[in-house]
Length: 423
Image (cartoon, rainbow, N blue to C red):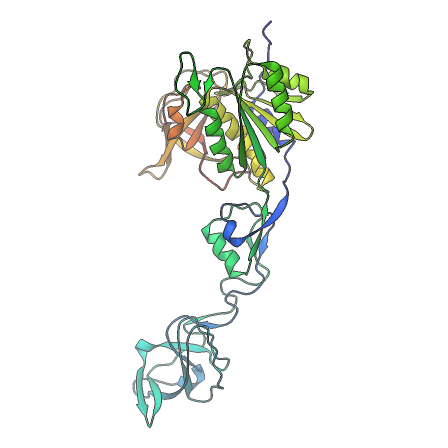
């Protein structure tokens, strides 16, 4: 007898999954290895930047009081008593009508309060004493970069859960983070179910297809920030599949299977979950594709039964699995970021379920995002995934949607994320 399943809304399904969100373990890694990882704590400035007043240009450090009243009719001469480059410190005390030749980034002598650039003075020398002539007044603070001008000590630099990029690497180096606190990557196991599956290196046989889902999901897991572990294929044999899943669950933080979650004769996952004693959070969602997506909870871990259809598998992962992974990584905004966009094609057939069509989104001359399908909009289609950079949301309605209507899109490559994708 075919099992009758009652679909729940996408919002309710997300809510049920996120009840089990948790932060993962923390570790320290070398700054050489932290790019692309997620911070496990706030990074706070431990010093002012710059940590001293410094010259913003190549020129001469002076005391502004010495050139008070200077003009073309009344030029003032200053003796050059020292020269310093970046990284050097002036060892002399600068007195009345004295100046220091200074390079960009060098520390300003304590007696000086301004810099004049080479181009605006005249240089000379008399009796081996170099000097400059200035024919204009110079304001205090002229051409200086002040202590703490960029960052003050104690300022929050980067928040916990942020993905480290090259710019953040620069900040970490600036503030001396040789060891960087990051969230430990969760381990996500993958099984592909189905006797019909062939691996990528196997020749095609009649009635069989190559296993694309496992490789796709592994890439999605890596993009989310976790470590994928592929455990191979499961044949449509209950005992073997049950034992394999039970054994591997102990080795991972999350376990994902692709295929086998519908109500067909060879869909074994519902019976396996029951034998395991897992709590079913849901097994039917009012969405297309991916309505048979199933999530269960067992001993503090989530098990995802994703559809065997590639597009449905892909969407199920992005909506329900990625946010859990991102919470392991301390992200405060674990869901896909949403944005308004203009629909580029008609979808005139009404939907009973919310649709997520794989899309290519571009910003056009009007400054707005525009979205069009990235391929054929069917759950078994692989090619529509190759160029998708978004999922366009079409909530259920009876009339469909017309080209030019405003819709919401979920951005697949955007790293910022959102705290909740549904208004």
